Length: 230
Image 1 (spheres, rainbow, N blue to C red):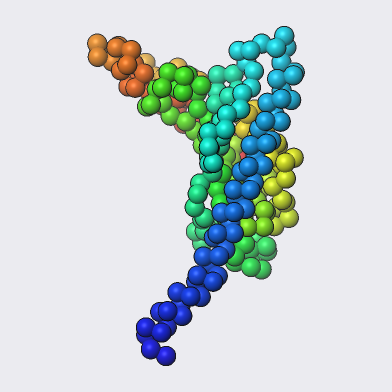
Image 2: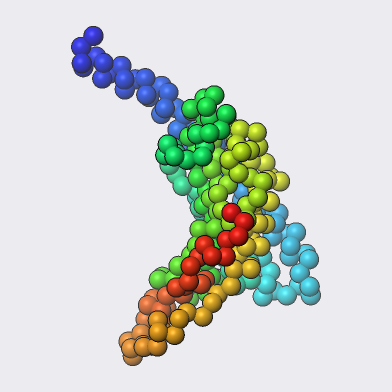
C-alpha cells in the first residue's frame, strides 16, 4: 500500500471513529446543558417561595442567554453556566485514566465541559468590563451521559463515580445548589490599601470607573486558601 493510500485510510478511519465520538459527545453535552436550564428554573421557583417576606432584592433569577450560556442571579452574585462547544481529551497524568470505565473503552474518556463561574451582579449591572469572575466548578460529561465534577465543595461527584453516575436532574440540582452555597459564602474582601491608594481624575470619571477599577471576590488574595473540601 502506497503512502498516499495509507494516509487516506488513516483519515477515513479517524472520521469513522474519533470524529463520530466527538460529535456524539457534543450532542450529549448539549442535551444535558438543556436539562441544566430546566433545573435552574426549578431551583429559582423553589427558593423564591422560601424567601422571607418575598424580599425582591434577594430573589433568585434565571436568564437563558442562548444556546451555550445561562445565568442564575443570587442576591449580589451571578453564576454563569457556560457550555464549551468543543470536545476534550485528558492529559495522560489525569486521574481519569485510572478509571476502570475508561480503561475498558478509551472512547469513554472524551468529554464535553460545562463551566460554572461566579461573578458579582454589579459587574453586569454597571458593565464593568474589567471585573473578574472565578471558576468554581466544571462538569465533564461524555457521550453516554456519565460525568464527574471538579470544583469547590463538589462532594460525591468525583472521578471514582465516573461510569456509574448519570447526570440526572437531581444530580444537576445538587451541583447547582453546592455552587450557589459556595458563592454566597465566598465574600468580597477589601483589596490591599496599596493597590487602591492612588486614582487619577480620568479614572474617577463614571465611564472610566466602570471599566478601569477592577473588582472581584478576594481580588489580590490567594483563591485556593478557602477551598477546604476540593
